[in-house]
Image (tube, rainbow, N blue to C red; front, top):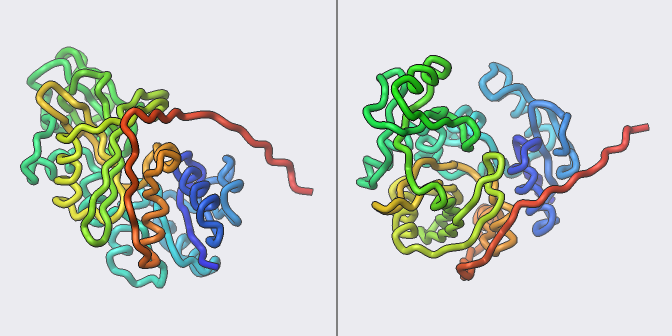
Length: 313
């Protein structure tokens, strides 16, 4: 039985990934890591280990100890801070374990939103203007200010004036200003998978956010979005799965974020037939991957559940 390590198991994305594997690939044994154990992650894995923050000196050593103790065959890093630290080790390929990631270029571009804009511009793709707060105030309003690192829409604000710019930038000097893309109701999250032989599948979900996450989504099929996602996948040498966030403006689709990992819609799209988690495992074992047709108009929604953990006797 092969063992898979899923990091960040306290988070909803890692739990979705672990749940998919447990249901559809029961031959694997699952192990999880997280910063603490006060969450439901233990319900999704055979064993759970606490690790330091990814930016702490002891993180890599602790992770290596866990991998050796659990005899890990495959590692799926689930958080951007971990990907940033692990990337050199993954590329060095000194471990016997196989690492499932989106590839060096996608990770480098995705963990830094300023770098995202730069890399897409280098590919000749249209992008929203983006400037670091430390380089000055925006020239046009309204715009948005958001964290340069990390993902999600919970930590961003609309900047409507120079007074707003001064106010927000003083509180977050490491943030970026970015063009406000409209209309708000045309936000699309795209699951993109590129196989080892260069085939690309794109699932476009017109979404409505709930608490910073996709709460409702409808499958659409816009050729311009497909072409854009394929250009990014090929241009950044995507290896496996990534998530592209964009708004379909009057001037066409404009990307504002790339998630270099499985995203919060992983479970939703698995139920639709876009099985990128399972495809990654199949390719890790040199098995063929085939892409299904998912009908436009299909709707997915996020639901809520709860569980009780009884104290050990």
